Each structure stands twice: as C-alpha cells, then as structure tokens.
Length: 236
Image 1 (tube, helix red, strand yellow):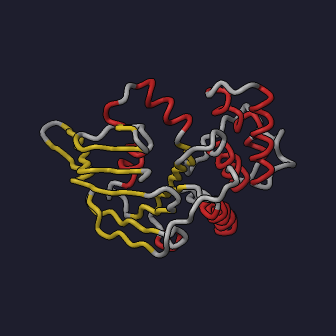
Image 2 (image 1 turned 90 degrees about the vertical axis):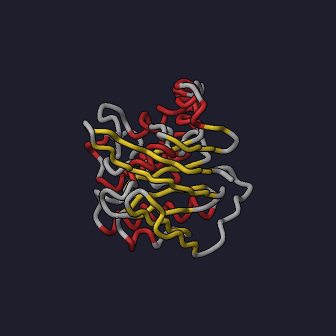
C-alpha cells in the first residue's frame, strides 16, 4: 500500500464556526494506480491534496505514505519527503520565470544535493522525454501553456518520486494541450508511476483507472475501472 488515509478529519475554525473540510475520510491507494479525485468546489479536494502532499496535517486521523507515519514526522522530515517522494504538478505551473526550462527542472535535484552534472543530465533526459528537447534554454514567457506544463511534469519527475500529485493539471490549457498532458500521464501510468489527480471535470477523470468522488468532505463513490498497472523494470 502506497497511501493509507485512516479516519481523516480536517476542521477549520472561524470564530465560533467549525467547518469540516474532511469528515472521517478513509482512502487507500496502491502503488501503480492512476486515481482521480473528483468533486465540485467545496467538496474537500484541495484539502485532501494538501494532506496527501504533506503540505498540511489533519486535525485527527492517520496518514501513512509507504512505511512512514506522516503525522509523526518533523518539519525537516516532511520537507525531505516532499522533495524526494512526491512530485507536484499545479494548474498554474509554478515555474520560476527568470530561469530556463532546464534550470527549472534542475531545482529539485539541486535541493537533493545532486551534482551539477547529474542535475543537467537528468533534466535534459526528462525534457527530451516530454518533447521539449529544443526548448531547454527558453524561459517560461517564451513557452506556451502546454509547454510550461510539460516543464512542470519534467520537474515533478526529477527525483523519481513514488507519488505524482496533479492539481487540475489541464485547468489553464486549451483542449488539445490538455489532451497532450493527459497522454503523458497515460504513458507514465503505463510505466508504473502512481498518480493522484485532482479535477472537477468528469471527462478528465475518465482518463484515470480509478475515480474517487468527494462530497462535503466524505467519499461519495469509489470506482475502479481496471487493475493497477504493474511497474516495469525501466526507471522513470
């Protein structure tokens, strides 16, 4: 089991009002699954993403990632997990505008203390894999939205994370660019990469092999469409 969320509650308090963003939520995700978390605004998707991504702690309940009990880790240990075990892909890309595509992909490797040669070799490899071998020295304002998201995917994969988290990854893209990004996800899933994707769009959720629907912080439906893809021997 890669992810185990057990009786997760997240309560936000404003004055005398307590809002249950997540309400006794239980989810398990196996290694190799491509799971879409779907729900309308206010369903708890973003709160769930923050907890799974080790950006926020639940009010109560347990979160296990691999063999790590996330609730019990220090800030420095959580930082290391975010850098080495989780790759993040955001709707707004979050690229550094003053750095090239190559430099953006190198950043997680730099924080992981890889050598400069290792950083460059890995970044070049990943940018080539997402079809940007001729855009490595371009800055983000010289790239289309779809190209920027490809850079973000390459950056997320830099340290070979166990888990790829995607928050509305096609939300700022036209339909063709969005489909190209989802095709990359299909390929990664086929190679054994675990992906958890947040979306409000049922059509996009259909690309996953499992769909988990949230409503008012609870699991409304959990549908598996096929068995998880088994990892192949080639490293991602």
